Image 1: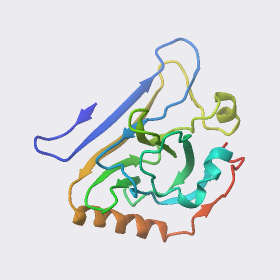
Image 2: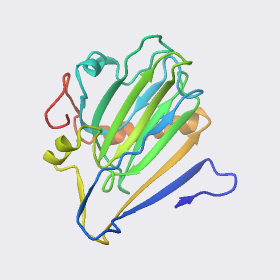
Image 3: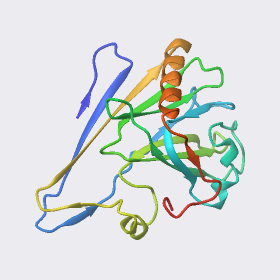
Image 4: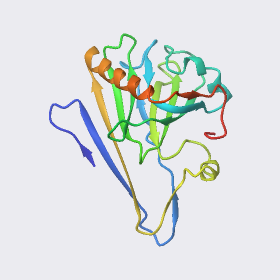
Length: 206
């Protein structure tokens, strides 16, 4: 279900995945939330409180020092992806924030960590004609081969009639005060424990 109010700057999605069949089935789920201009631009910034993260592959490892910052449209750019174990607030939600270069507007995804324990950042700053976009992607798993995710315990098994529920909220921040408030929250959550940043792909993630 999608919930919002007239004049609101946010909406909430509650999803339920049900196995209607007669046999146990496996389920993977990732929300590929694509964001572009005006939030995405050269110098745009990504923020997320996390306990641990790693690049998906050697290509992503090339940009590990700059994973929070975005290039402008770049012809020939090859995508990069980063995997995170997020940290949640006192209500159980993790805030993922994309802000424009000046920090005057932001795109915020608050997701319920207990049901969406994985987060993927997808960076695809190709030319605008080829698709200048980034993905903020909470999920129950990472976008690896299913066999790999099964081995790491990130594939959900549903018996006949069983359901799995997820929840997240998307907000548009249209001034620097609202952006700063979320940034401060992320900083406080990050300070709860030192974040581990792997400079190369790690077996825990991929």
